[in-house]
Length: 53
Image 1 (cartoon, rainbow, N blue to C red):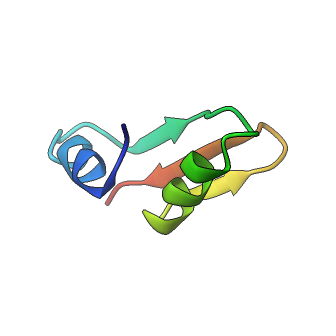
Image 2: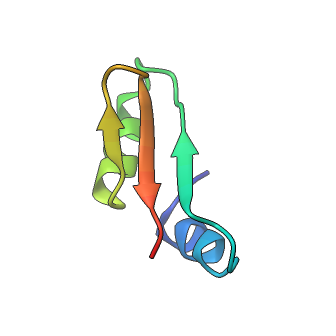
């Protein structure tokens, strides 16, 4: 399960630049969760991306 805490753990890696996730499109709950955690949908590639600062 991916959640905000998981996202924060990835951000702790100093060389991480982004998180890329590709859930099944019909899994609306996962897609909604990703959007609520700050991911952006790349409709061309059908992936969710979150840039890390």
